[in-house]
Image 1 (cartoon, helix red, strand yellow):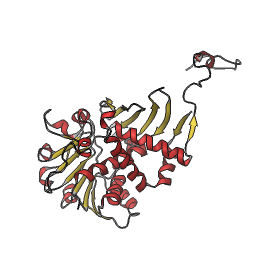
Image 2 (cartoon, helix red, strand yellow):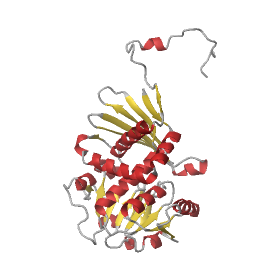
Image 3 (cartoon, helix red, strand yellow):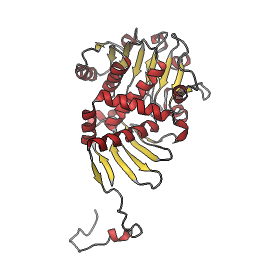
Image 4 (cartoon, one colour):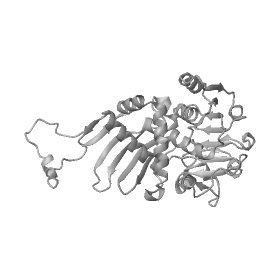
Length: 349
């Protein structure tokens, strides 16, 4: 039987474990899997683009398990009462192909994105970082704020969004963390000024310039999350030229990340190599570092495993018969034969 986790079940898991603990667990688990980087079969995600959005499939596998995520990105969805990002995924046994988990991943993606940002910042930001700017206050913003406040020591957060309502929502939700001082900025430039870390997590599918060179200060770490598909960027090219840039899976980031603006030979560093001690991370206190994060399937592989473990431990979710039973595997036709002849509509339409 296949474990099935729908959205209410995922919400129950996260509420039971707690957002702070869930992010911390994911960050450690993702780091552990990044250290196994060479054991995975990897490829850039398959994307189907339109003028208003994108739908993507993200596969990855090791010798034991195969995972994929279906995810969309449609910035105008909120005007229709839908989330900008919606996702689900599956985890299967590599030896048999049997699907062991079918799960919602919209909420889980926000958690794993924050966990990945946290993992990267631990390796790249200055240890004494205490102030962060958060540009883009939509659905992902609280998760980023909580991750950096609770697990990295950020105690001052300057926030900005072109939509004041998004910032109102963020301020309301972050009131649950009274030790985090949240400052509402009048512009992105005001929010960035004096910050140790800058997180950009905007949604518009366009070549935007959220960060300009004159906004960058020595020693900043830029957590660039929003630029994640062709034609969608957040950083001015000169910001990238003036920084040491780190990526998840380079073949994918070259297509989708902020470095899509740069020449094919623009130098980047694979984050997994920094975590494994094979490459240097931050080289000096004054160096600007950029994590050009687009989201990679390995992070979803880890997340699906964590969800499965928590669901089984907590007894949350249910099992479903997603594939045929195994008693007569060569006799699939018997499942199509009618036992009786009930009245049916004469046409499928």
